[in-house]
Image (cartoon, rainbow, N blue to C red; front, side):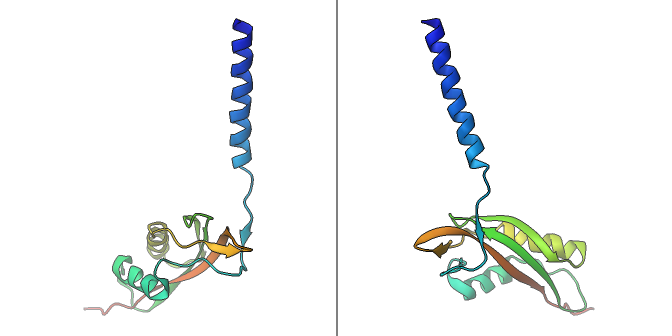
Length: 130
């Protein structure tokens, strides 16, 4: 009986390990889809989100940090990266504000939600110097 219970435990632990390994498999990330991922409420809501959440550091000229990230199948933002860096503080702020976004509506391809790569410029406006 002890051997039977031990055998069951070994088999179950193998199944759990196999499920963990399967979840590490790479997910296909689309760059072109029938329906791209969308910020909840659309483009105007995205602009409002940035105006309310982006901290504008003092800068003499407008600067843009180009970012990229993945909107996964459930709409969660993942893997935020800076493609065209600027000052360290601008890069960090762009990443921070994107990582704190609410979940998006996921992209759709062939009637199912898919992971989708987004490229998004984050614009820092010029501040008047006193």
